[in-house]
Length: 403
Image (cartoon, rainbow, N blue to C red; front, side, top):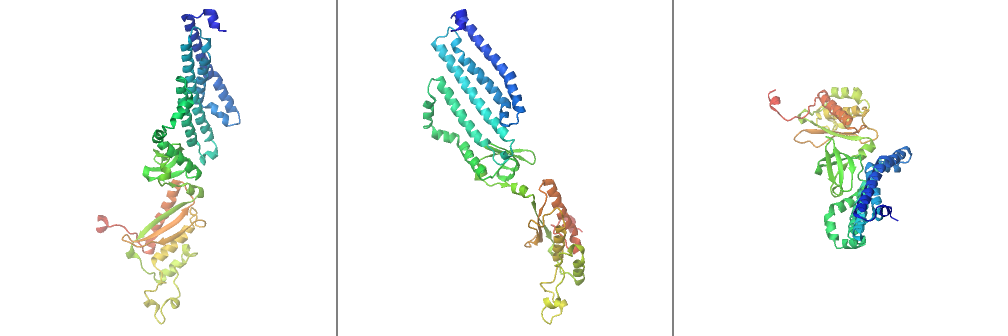
């Protein structure tokens, strides 16, 4: 029973009025859904203790869902419009069905993205992001949705078009090569826990040095320390090398590895008076290797100690500086000298003097604090050199040559 046909007949006027009425009702339904019903459901979702119903709060999902329901309403209203012949009825049904499928595809993909947004609020999302996997599903939903729309418009089964994809596989592989590589890389990164959102990474090939802020299917975004954003193709993270500083953050210690180049011309043996004085100084009480050995044990038989200038056990001012720095650094509360590797060592001498390297780990990983600790240690080491009659190596300049 068709109310429009009973009231107005089957003429053009009846068809026009019925069509306008159906479209007006669809618009009113859209307004009610978007302004009343869906916002009310969103408020209810916010009041619940469950997180997963918060996907209803996503505005994109609400918009496409409202359009989907309105398109379904218009599609179902086709039989009530009088005066339509078989061609126009079929046209109405196919076009409205295509719109419904299109809006349903967009609503599904918005639901997937909203699901990811809720998932990212969970602590596990930092270790196991799923955005890349959802984007793969998103691509398949789009492909199937487009094929379904095309099948409805030409009145063919979707499987008719899907069967033709086999012949186009080579073309698809060429078009989606980056996507396929990135998908495989995403799985590799996730399975081996190589990268997480929030990790500090360095990848000089792409100029990246900062924090990972987003991991998608095709790209990984890194916010550098100068607040610029570097976008890296996901598959490059498995084919190229990069440095991840996560281990440093988890350990709570950051390495300090700095060298001071000593002027070789200032290196000399200590006198007996200097040896005793350095041995009695407070920083060296607990670590006194500077104290000279018994001459009777270290000199050649029958030779006077003062004549044995080549004695290997005779301390130098570099030894005194070494012991002083060891004792000084062990008392530094900012260094993990008991739990992490710690040493002061000489490197191979070269044209820039004798490098004395400080190798230690700080208890602070924050950049500003770490640099302050490192600067304090190096500055103190340089300032104490004159006390041991040592001088840091420095290239000759016009100002030094005229002194």
